[in-house]
Length: 147
Image 1 (cartoon, rainbow, N blue to C red):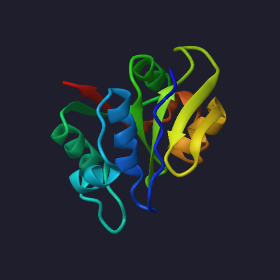
Image 2: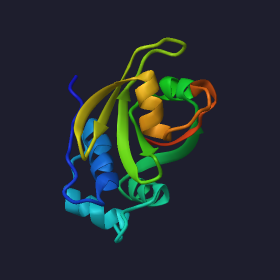
Image 3: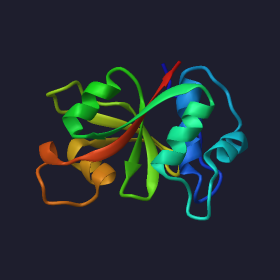
Image 4: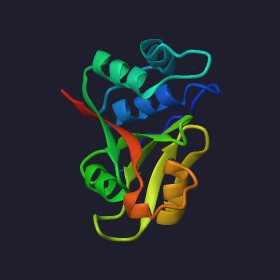
């Protein structure tokens, strides 16, 4: 199944574009402008909390997590998630390697399109440049499940 991709329409609406992709994955169709209103996009974009509230407003059960890369693999094996990257951008992880395996990470980046990254590249992309070992790095994710 092809993941439903949507580009952001402006510099600060990556969050609503990610919400649109998740909604379309679950066969809910919303205009990006409607989701921008639900997210209350501000001058500098939206927060994870804004996405959480907007997700609930359109009928999802939402849960925010701090995850390691291994934990993310377990979550994405069941459903795509919105990731907060480098504290200023949102993307959707829709396919990852199986837990305890190496492989490619499939990301829907509303600014750049569908991209595929190796684990080291993905860790830097999601969590920023750091010297810590990938297994101990923590990133932020938002899971949205239909109610």
